[in-house]
Image 1 (cartoon, rainbow, N blue to C red):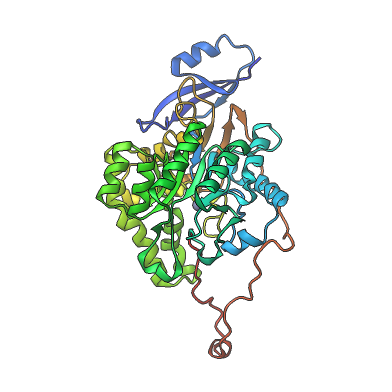
Image 2: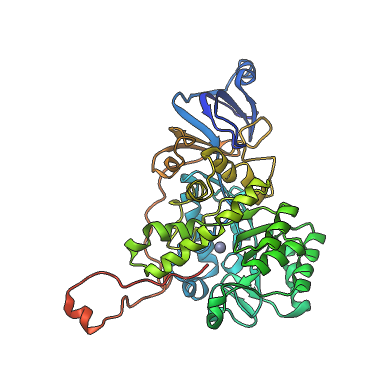
Length: 454
Ligand SMILES: [Zn+2]
């Protein structure tokens, strides 16, 4: 017998961008089965339904974070991810961090790439009910060329390090895509663009040929697996779109040709601006170099016009936090991309919420099955104290999310137990440079930090 729960007198935000309305929401088993009068009629025939009066509260779909690295454990640097971590332990730590996501109202994530590609195991454990975590859709190792990605010379010419596999030539591409599908990748992740330190002034450049990208997409699609590409700059986005990539991360710096193709093919874009926005708003308090702050802000402002054109043309924009790095720790900023979309792209709160819910279901490969409050949808829901359509930022306030339902079941929102340091886990740092002037000045301010690129 499926358990029935009636969320009565709810203020409903449906996640489809429509105006909020008042209604009862009836959950049976893992699904929303009825709304409004139909829900009340139906519940009258159910003997053991649980009624929850939600006067003054909002019911909305759970947030879907389409760019979250659950295995990175809020790393402060790429070397930490690449060289300090262990496989089983990082999967266990990911299970711990997953609770922070649930408490922040995240009921689904797309994890693009993970250390030891262990997100496949974390996902399977969550699906089997062994751990409590949001729905997870994931890639394995990011495919990268020896040119590199965003970690400079840390990218080796061959083989696996951290979250990537460096592939050389057709044979290795074929073998790796097939292997990842066999391992259980939901998506194939390609690091389409990268930055080379000596040519950093050119920004990220496309590091694959058209033929190579075509090959990846053809192989993956033949096996029924979609492809997601990290693309900054015109050439990478254009080639990825042409090859048939199904989801574009970042997508900043597009020219007309790239933009036209993305619009033509309606390829969803997840800009993942939250990291940059945090740097812009709070970097000065972390001692970040002002020049770097300007650079990060420009990535958003320079792309705002093209992002607005995507939206106007009906291309879905998805929200991604890039959580997993110390600038965007788990549980704190998953709502923030909505704020960024409103501030820089001029979206309404309901449009932004749609990006984080109804549209985000695509990232979970569950479009039309979750992310929306409607009959037939999975009951992945939040109960919020207040109205996020008046202020989306309340979704980030501790205690505002009073209940989370995942698959129709109530999620335990008690705080995770306090953790202690894991030996050898973080990258040891000697701290700031001790110049003689600094030592004698008595100052305690950190010098400008140079955050890692993503
Ligand atoms: Zn990322």
